[in-house]
Length: 250
Ligand code: SF4
Image 1: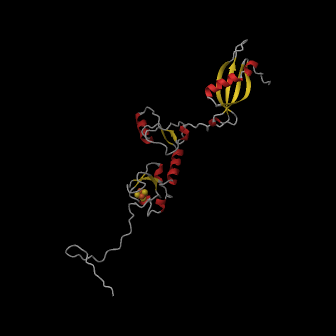
Image 2: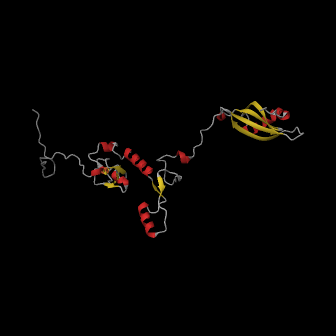
Image 3: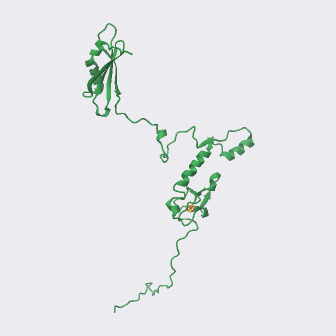
């Protein structure tokens, strides 16, 4: 396809185009004239380099037009556009995709994920009072979605390999496991076989989900080694001071 020839009057109006770019860029922001190209009948775009340090590789584009049988040039548009080697900002990623576990703070609300594989549809009312009452009780008091098998497995894996599983330093040095601890509250449901909650305020795991093979030094049946018994009582005089035997140097 042949490149259309730019309108001669507009192609020669480089100074008018530069003046329009300078109006936006300010003095010193517009570089050399790089090119001119036709956009159609009596419409051309002039290209200039951009001298702003923060816009390396960008170019000023000034589009000029004129009416038929008129030599008066008018400015249609002025833009700063990136060239092929322009310095560009990284691609925008919405915050809902950037947020990670641990980022949630008080007052924040996370976006709802409609197709979250960790959840599945819960109970839909049938209208039958007895059936509905049973289902509501079993599935969690009318929550629209409940934990799916995938969501449960993911959580179990995360908890087991985390700070309250068997590989934590507290657990590795514990005198006994949570499974034999009186402060261990077993969970309800399928996860009961492996997990419970620690209810000992002296434990670093208090209020956390712990695995049966986790453990810590605050285990209900653990104790420190008994100290050697004192065999002789100190002799006190009537003022309460300890009587000390003096030994003389030979
Ligand atoms: S006190 Fe220690 S051993 Fe007992 S349940 Fe809590 S973490 Fe487990």
